[in-house]
Image 1 (cartoon, helix red, strand yellow):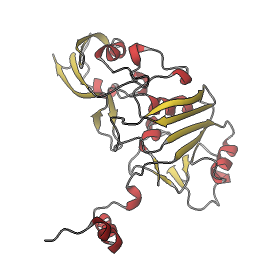
Image 2 (cartoon, one colour):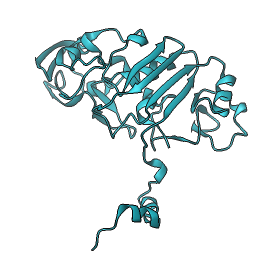
Image 3 (cartoon, rainbow, N blue to C red):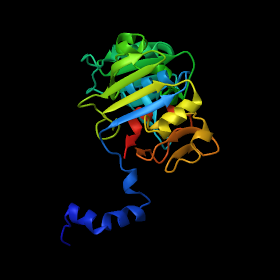
Length: 272
């Protein structure tokens, strides 16, 4: 069989047919670039989304609900899930250039029990009581890893290992993050060049900002302002409008059940 040139494949329409046969579409393919803009109410949404952009956790819940490693590449347990060991990534740096090490992770795990660094990339945790669900618990944004256990706020000083570093931020009002070049998740997450989160307290004004093209996603908008707007999509549904999304925004096929996609919008959504 001769090998078909990729450009010829797409030009012939065969690619679209192949994707349709496999249940995918060209719109499902993430694209790099652009500025993703979100309008959120005055609650904890700004902090939740900014944390998801700037920081990583040891584990994460994938869009399909499965557990996978983030800063941890693997883990083992002993004594019926009372003792845990976590293997850490060796190719990760904080946004200030400091290399991630086991002591940074120990600072997070001490909340659960007695934690110690066995090597630069290996941590041991001993719990007072067994907890088989610990890796799932560690995916929660409460347990992001910061350098030397530093506080994750104020936002303008946040120093994480996530896909986006803080370019400009004002607590409770605004966040602008820029994609980290050469991040370990390149090609898997962090598609937009920049992510901007704007606090707009009025639900009607958030809807107007989306309708008029000032933002790409509006959280908890006034639905009446959007009923006649064509092309918008709604999560989880038009009758239960937690998020209203512009046509140019690409969304994962499966997203988290929480209003803001478990705080992972910044790294998982893109501009189509």
